[in-house]
Image 1: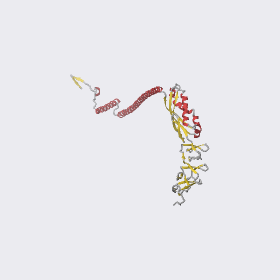
Image 2: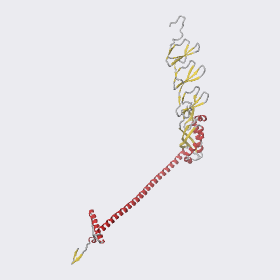
Image 3: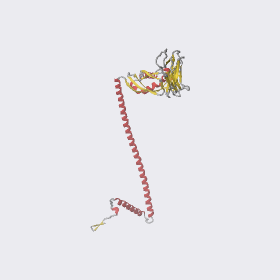
Image 4: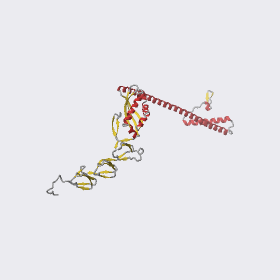
Amino acid sequence: MFLEPTWKEEGSVKKAFVLKAHEYIRLLDVTTGKIAVHKGEAIVFPGPDDEILDSGKKSAVEIDGEHAALVRNKRTGEVRLVTELQLFVPGPNESIEEVRELIKLQEHEAMIIKDKDGGYQYYYGSDAKRSTEQPRAFFLPPNAEIVDIWWSRGPRREKKDVSFQRFDCRPHFMKFEFNCRTADNVELILEGVLFWELVDLPAMFRHTGDTSGDIVHHMRSQFILRVARVTLKDFMEQLHAISKTVLEEDVDFYTTRGIKVFSIEVTRYQCANQTTSQILEQIIQETTNRMNRLSAAESENEVSIFKMQGEVEQSRLKGELLEITNQQAQAEAVVTGRCEANRVSTFMSVLEDTVPSLDDRIKVWQVLRKTEALSVVSTSGASLYFTPNDVDLSIETRNGASKL
């Protein structure tokens, strides 16, 4: 284009805008104040009175299942949340305030939402706690905000600087530490663990703004009250009983705040004063040594008792063995005697016709028995000695000479 004689060039040469499918541009007509929105795919030539808004081309917002656009109408001031699946391009009088992500709650999580009227809505990931019309995954509504909770941290809960938006409704442990004084004026430092669970979120939110701090501070006051009634010796003996009393006698305090406490355990205690701590260590050491000595004595007694029990059992078994052996020997003797008696009776009966005299039969029987004895002795290599009676030997003297 060539300028005419009466024309004057104003500014530089303007370039056209090439818009892709996901891009748009907003132009303001400075003569009328109207805003025009041009979407891609297109080539846009700004007019002579058009002013580019928002620093040029912008990308449309991808509205999907995970993202939504919070849009404000500049003409009416209305705010709406766009959740329909699309490539969203704001209108001439609209602006995108925020792109919000889908809030997805796990099974153990919960959240508190403050709506536009100042009321509080409670969202849960658990199907058991969530109502039928309440979603598990949702976009934050317009003019609503997520409630931030501030709790105390540390064993003594001295700093309230822990912020979070999602509540963990699972049971978990919490450490605590505080000082208390016994009846005999010994200052102790108690350390322990509290096992608890958040069971009623609305009750907790209504009654306390610092759940962890309230629990620890209340528990500290209860321990101080009960420890002050006992001496150090009684405290060492009744530590677990005191912890159980603190838990069971004040259940309403925790229930009112939507808390369920399963157990309170004091895991460690020490004297705040170093000198007293040394004395306590000596007492504990002596107690430990005494218990070790008692354990050693009990072990020795157990060994001795076990040894004696073994000897008693051995003696009993020996007695039973001797009794069984005696019974067997008697039984064998009875059997042997009966066999011998039968043998003699048979021998005498059979020989009665041949040798009528009983004395002669007895002599024959004795000779046979001697023969059997000689046979046994001869096979064993033993020496045999006979007396004159055994061989029927007689000596007589005739004419000065001896004759057998």
